[in-house]
Image (cartoon, rainbow, N blue to C red; front, top):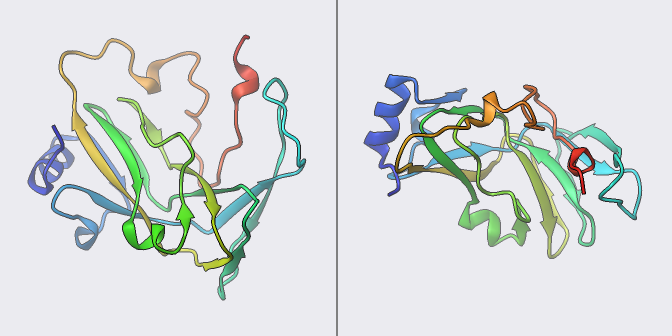
Amino acid sequence: MILSDKAILESIDKGDILIEPFRLDCLGSNSYDVHLGKYLATYNDRVLDAKQHNKIEEFTIPKDGFVLQPGNLYLGVTEEYTETHAHVPFLEGKSSVGRLGIDIHATAGKGDVGYCNTWTLEISVTMPVRIYAGMPIGQLIYFKVDGDVKNLYNKKSNAKYNKRTIKPLESMMYKNKF
């Protein structure tokens, strides 16, 4: 079951959801709009290795915007820091963003109960498009969880994305054993 706007507000009041900064005008009937932060990153190498730490180069989006190019993967980040202690958060792109040919995540749209951080975006485009820091980029949808949660993400010793950041994070796949 997806939380309504009233249920999201009640969960914020109870401390089950935190959104910083929170703006009431970003609350939809069953979602919350998030915005593109000022940092983007790209990988240094054109060939990535899942067993290696692939380094990224971060940069700030200029005031007059930045043109994303097809064939490149850009890591972005939300302006909003979020905490979700009792629900499963899903990050989806906004339809107006999709209509510009922008995808904001390849596979990582679902968060875990206990996820506390900004959201790294895996941005790709179908044609060149200029983007701006602060533009609406996605929406968070919250699902109710059936039953108690044993392993909150922020309490897991092997959680790879727990350190609070305002910048996009590269893949930590190399930390897995395979």
